[in-house]
Length: 259
Picture (cartoon, one colour):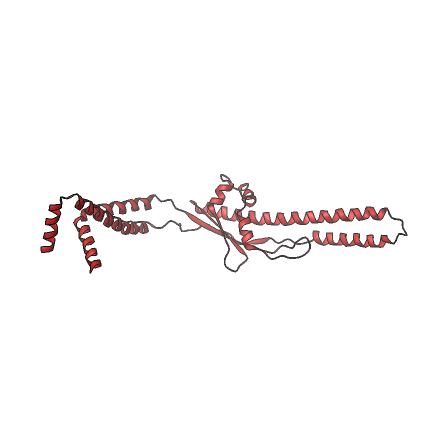
């Protein structure tokens, strides 16, 4: 009963200040409508890239850590490559517009770029995706080159040792075998095929904006306006009641009771 009485009291307070409710609700609804009219359009374009396992220098093929690749895709090294291909942008600007996601259970990276222009969103998404593949390929080639140089250096040291030995020295056969093995390993390493991945789904300019339609803003404004208006009306009524003389409040309560 107390709860019902309290709700009734709240209803009466709001009803007494219905003008406040209407004014506040109208102001909020109008503000939401204006906001919907001036809210800038945003467009998101997505480019999808497969991430392939790259053989290591020792010939093994380690598993791909997709979370690590996601972080690399947003790294300064990758975005710097993209910046060189795009006008009027920066690494920090690209990073703020870029979201990289991994579809569950896949070896795919999705490059999602959001800007105020559909064409530019698609251009940036494709450029960043291509920059990621270029960076990954270059990193693999760099590792192979370093490993190849190390093998060549070791082989040269063994050849120098071999040249210093007498023709009949039994160590020559062992050193010659090591040199041949190093040369073979280096040739295999140089011939290693690098497939960092591919752009399987290039981004296209989105037709629809991410921004909610005007009707959404208007509907939300009406709903929020009624809520805020009711709250303001309730507070307004409570403040007015607290400022009325005690006798006047008593008479009003008496009339309500008798009624």
